[in-house]
Amino acid sequence: MPAEEICKKQLQIVLDPEHTKCSICLSVWHDVVTVAPCLHNFCNGCFSEWLKQCQEKHSSILCPQCRAVVQFVGRNHFLHNIEEDILQADSTLRRSSEDIVLLDSHASIKSPLVISSGRKFSRKRARAPPDEENAPCPQCGNEYAGFQCNQSTIHLQCQTCGGMMPSRSNASVPQHCLGCDRAFCGAYWHSLGVTGTDIHPVCSREILKPITERSVSRIPFLVHEKNRHEQDITEKCLRQMGRSLQDVLSEWVTKMNNREIGKTRLPLNHSEMINPQTYVCNECYDKLVSFLLYWFRVTLPKHYLPPEALQRQDCWYGSACRTQHHNEEHARKRNHVCRPTRGGAHM
Ligand SMILES: [Zn+2]
Ligand SMILES: [Zn+2]
Ligand SMILES: [Zn+2]
Ligand SMILES: [Zn+2]
Ligand SMILES: [Zn+2]
Ligand SMILES: [Zn+2]
Image 1: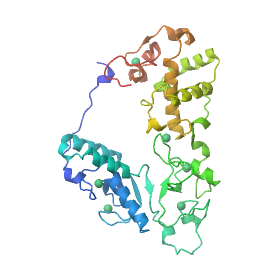
Image 2: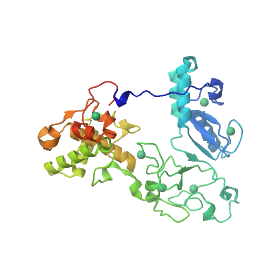
Image 3: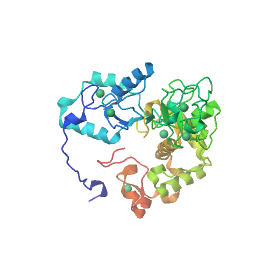
Image 4: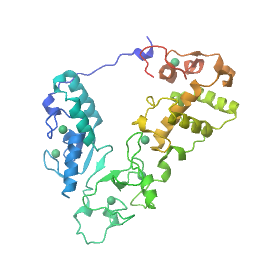
């Protein structure tokens, strides 16, 4: 039996749909978010609307269900799966597609939001000098480019350094990577000329920057599904052609932008919106490189391939093959940079 067909063991649990409902709209959660510390759950759209109203009134953010002060809100991926299972089991609980479009248009929570640090800063008198130790971010108590945080400012936590930055809808540079929707502080603080301190770490600009401004000197480890033999072959092809990796990637970024290759299989969020000026994080950039090098290889004229690569047969499962990850000989003897010809593998 091929490794691909190993059956999954599934655990059955009994769940009351009443416990999977949002107390704002009274339907089963849609794109569920969890607030802390009380851990109540709501639809992303419903809670985003609530958040907006509280901010407009400059009031503190209280949980709509229990009135506890909300310090944090984030999407809950585990409960999201449960939300899907419930709707599968009972389709009468589904909302209309118009409702879903409306709810999604309100949803503003992409990455975890830190709403109140719960530390002394927010309780201080407004005129007290800012105490850097207790301020969540460098912009709390210091004005940069005409903006200073106040007590109702919501902060984003950077995925890389763990530092905070104010969540700004009108910032001149992105605060999120479009490929993964996670928050990164590098571009934001760099645009304000703010550098880090021991108390407030700040990432370098390199962490989040436009695709065209990125450079890569060697093949990232996740290219060709981490198959080292295929990576070697790609390296040899580049040498044979006398071209640098960077040069080939720039060419393929242009081809992607000109729609010579489809973006639907690009393993990034919002793939249709990705263009050369898009800000992405290191991880998403490596995924993009991986996607582009796949296209470079599958379209490469055969005479550029090294002799050992020419004699191989295509693996039925192509790049989706899982055997290549644990069977060294299989990984080497079959071509894995090809489209799958067998069912079950999705590419
Ligand atoms: Zn709701
Ligand atoms: Zn609550
Ligand atoms: Zn701040
Ligand atoms: Zn990313
Ligand atoms: Zn950072
Ligand atoms: Zn294979």
